[in-house]
Image 1: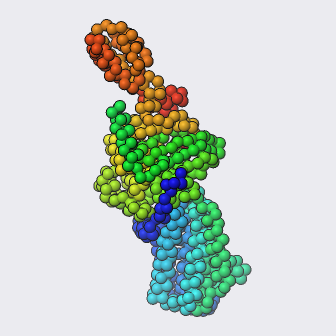
Image 2: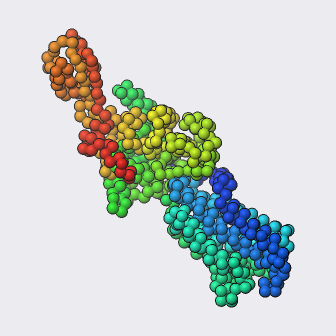
Image 3: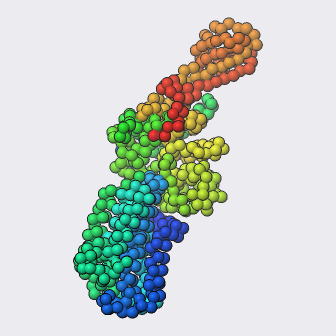
Length: 259
Length: 331
């Protein structure tokens, strides 16, 4: 039986990945949920905050920062969280629910490429959000550009890694789109509280703030905030982000189902 | 019917001669697959030769779909062996997926992608893919090329799904209920397409519960019932096994002695129904009866020929009808 086994190049051509990302990009425009929630809402929030004159005044209780300067990193974390908890799992769970993953799994395309394409498109969206928020914040509302660009980039990348791993885990365990949305909301809103969306970390009681710094979005905001101010992000918050990334990536890989 | 069978055989023979790929295309041995509470596939074995159209025919829930899903590596068998051109679908998954084009039930495509975008995407997964334009023409999807998947009718979705099974120029095409949801004209068009695919040397495994489809297309058919293979043979041979094979009814122009016909090797029985005569027999019954009567100076008028069908074969072999329990969800 093994007589006519021939060694074929079974893996798909590398161009397949480009096509996959191109299709995901088209879908991102055609079903702009990621664009709206991940990009438009944070930018609109920044514009609203920036339009309030008092938000541009340095305030002693915020450690001498303006409200805009405090909120810029929070809104970046908001974007990452939105994309991680809504856009990413929604796409994957929909594909599973409709049988798209099942259809793809009968082709030579490695299933991991589908996940990778989702991560790429959502990473690109997060990067756009970052650029827009930094540029709009700096140009229109006087929020200084990050003073430690390397630290800022590192904080951003680790934040994306941690939260996207959590998003993949949601996609892995949620039974359907409704469940995925419910899980996403249950994670996103409490975590955004610790990130300081409603109440900046600077104003939180010490105990709450310490708890917050152990949450992924809290650690993310802390790291982004320090880097904006010119300090290298605290190692503690970077470690917290890395730990979430590793743990949830492992959980996601272990529990991911294609059907 | 007989003419078609013979052309099929000669075609198959020519493929066998021309076939560069020695060995069978698909071997399934003692496949068994259970789900909690049910035995989907009990014990299924068959061999599909290169270049043939092999039918897997049986009622819903017989285990047809589970069998082909195991063959493409979507399901893991409890026991048994499967080889796709020598490859084990669970070990050499990628190799098998590069060789096999599959059309499966319960699978869908991105609702917001256009037909041509989906074809172009799937085309990029293969090393030596087919031409998208040719496939669009062959499946009558040319004018729908820019339509979103979600706007397609059921039949159009089915045809696109078939196009995707063929876009990688597979050596084996596994098609699960490919004409379900198609109108009669589209079904006949699809049949022609499949014959064209086979004529290009592709082995086709066709899962169906339509007998006309199996009779028209398949070189050989495996009848499957309750997770077991009941019989494997050509549609004509299976029909013959159903007993009787052919039945001829006619009105003789003049009286004749029954023994004139009952003495023929092709004849298995004779009845007189008033002025009509009913003769039962095997494959070449009709010509034998008419020729013998003619030599005795008798003309057969109002000749009515009935052939046993796959349906008869199925009923005979299992005691059940193919479409029994169709309302019950497929397994």
